[in-house]
Image 1 (cartoon, rainbow, N blue to C red):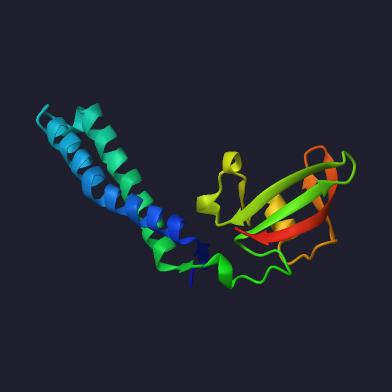
Image 2 (cartoon, rainbow, N blue to C red; image 1 turned 90 degrees about the vertical axis):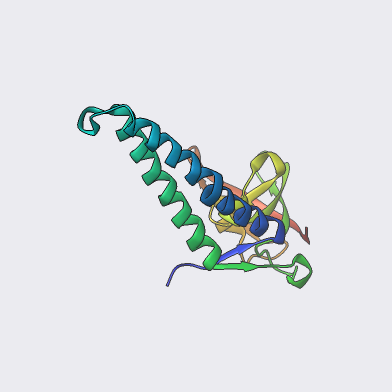
Length: 158
């Protein structure tokens, strides 16, 4: 069985919408490209046909990936999350001990991660390090420049 994916309601709806878009308009566009390439003549030497068939394969792979993610999705409500420990949908404030700088992130599913919005994946190095931790805990994150220590200052819900 595949791994369970946790989503916000908004993230889950976006995933479903993207799947419908790919199944509808995406498949139609690829079918049109294949048809136009077929009309160009000999398929054995037709680069446009080969490219369209490759694009079709990539599209079907993406559709399959989304279908699996949706089949294994669990929608979470932030109000149901215990905020005594850091879990998915928790907003955590961390302080870099060495630099004395604070950062705040919301832990989300990999598909919902968006650093510009302050949303990081629970599968990211920071996400993995803080999952299950409590306020006051020191977490160590492996970075290219070496290990970085953070103190977990606050846990809230979205």
